[in-house]
Image (cartoon, rainbow, N blue to C red):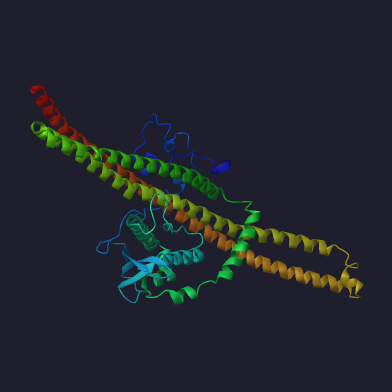
Length: 458
């Protein structure tokens, strides 16, 4: 890293970043690169020191009966229902909204939405608030070999992420007052509202213009946004590694659980043929069953809590990169106008000292001074227009920068809160797991001692 953006900072999952007291570094496992001490990050904490905590983190589930002083909009997503037609299969989700806001005609709404409706809302919000950080939507399709589409687990994970998506928007000080968000929560049918949006052709034209602007790039990107971009790149790499490690652990736990399940029936069958050893053998089988149950609980906690939290922030990195790119495009527009204004002023200065006798207009018999005056008027008009565009774009750049910085601070705080909650939950699950294993092992040892004593007495 270079310049002011090149500052070493703690890993976003380190104790300091998560709010724990700092301790001396200890030796770390080289295989777990996600926790490598050599990893360097742009100091994200510098963006989030002065802003208060968000009303809720992405992992906190809102309930309609919660009494929160500062909360005036409650949203819940539940009741997925499968719909099958000759053309397509899809699920709809019930969305219950309760609010005390005056701009709503009622205090309670209940609508049903499918996934593509959420996708429409995300597109509308991105179009109107291009430099705000939106929460991620779950993927449209399941990962082949891991979870099949329309599998119950996949649908439940999607429901939870859609619930988080809407509640993150409801908690946002700007996005929660968006008109399209209100329509999404209250309108029975979104079809008419979708037709009023931008057409496909206009969006394609805007995309082509954006790509053309991005070719030049941004020459003078502020250090803080360069730091954000570098931080997101490294954070994405580390979270991806962490996700792969979690998948590996989850796979090994499932294999271990399946292997243990094969032993309990063997001891039970053995006890039926050895009446004198039946009690200790049944005790050993019961201990193995308890270990299997504890392993399944640990596996469920990992797949329900930690894996979705990590994957959610992997998706967040893509959103962050897109937001930074849209901010760069706004600045690129501004820089282009500045460059064009400088060229026009230079052209005007050259015109004042140039000879117009050999211009095309002069050859047509026009008065040279008249030709010169017309050119000056044209350039003056272009300069005035560029100056007006620059004033508007300057305000737009300042607004985009302030919006992104504020949302970045909010995102950093939420990320640390979510990671702290997810890893804290995983630690508690592991403690409970090992306590149950120790208790089961104690019962098993007693059974084995009885078993050994019975065998020796025979």
